[in-house]
Image 1 (cartoon, rainbow, N blue to C red):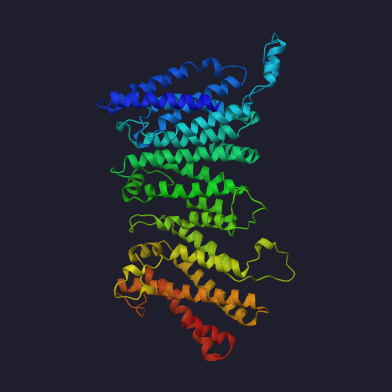
Image 2: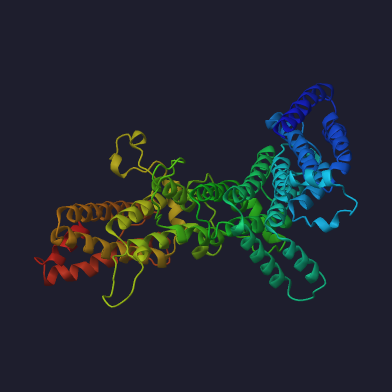
Length: 555
């Protein structure tokens, strides 16, 4: 089977190379519609009728392997010849059907089959083999570069890639019973949203029943679609990023669908695969939503839900934080807790590293953007544990000192850009962010409420860590708490400086507090209010433990 795939790939690679030279001066439309590769591909599909309609599975797998090799050859990188959208739709139509469940009931075969035929049947490939190879073909098909003519634009190509990937995964996860249920509800006139939700629930249920390798193949279909979408956007790099309302809403559905596929995933290999995919979705698709021209275009067309669906991604990854994973003995895959943690963190913080217009907010609803969602997740883990002795608690719910150290380091990576001493000529390198405009943009996606929550959590965490650093029963606990207290003070110092810097950049001072100004209100709730509250402790009991902790915090 692999030889069939490789031979087809080699044949179509040679045909593509020769046809590109002969069609160098042809128009893009003629090249897409009348290329040698497209003609040969159409001929190949026309000759697949007999093997694909066979009652045995092996001929189907061989035919699909041949088609897989052909589509792999046509990918060809950025210089690939490509095929037209019409050809893609033609191929997708029967590939999708072969991704779906196929009845293997022997009673459908003619009763005149002889004994040798049945012996061959016992050695036949399985229905699952057919479905897997068909899905592999779709993975290859939807990432072929330049599969549209220039006059078509990127919208139609993006729509085909996204919708084809989602439908292929739905079909691969479906059972025969699911297909029969869909046929029964086709004439149902009930709520369309309810029916859609029921179908998605069945898809996720079917996905969870698949073996790990087959789940990974479904995820690869979504990855392939995203690579194709990225190629479309890069092909039109000199054009505006604005998309029509249909494309915007389809990309929202694609993001929601992909996020839902992560729910309940427990295999670390699939988990890393999906975390990488959710990060790439933000890097590829999110800039289309943040472009000022795109936002204006979408709002003028009265499209609904044009905010990027951060909440869907967050809801999918938040249950995994913090990572609780211990590799099994002699783990052949080399996946560590640190690797899983880094991939999860990248999903939560990558939106702050985008090269976007600093005048654009991540979302119209500020509480729904990833910066606020991730900040609240981190400060929830940062807060000291308050466990009642008579309550039952799961061990995973108890926050350890190391959990709080990790949460504070993650919060720092989310909100604060790295310091760049090389760009701080004549200045104190400790207080010289590499890009103050970008730092200001990150803060602009915070709300007053979340800054207040963060301030209160840091105060409690610092007080608890400072006290435990002295009173802990063993030296290891003392060192851990001392490290946490120092990290709290470093974070407080840096955040306070950044808030004051933003005030000074607007020509204000820390004494000119105007709650109508975002930066002034941040300074007030994070610095001024806490200093006023802690000053009361200093005036009443400066020599107590709380008094000394307050001095350290204020300093």
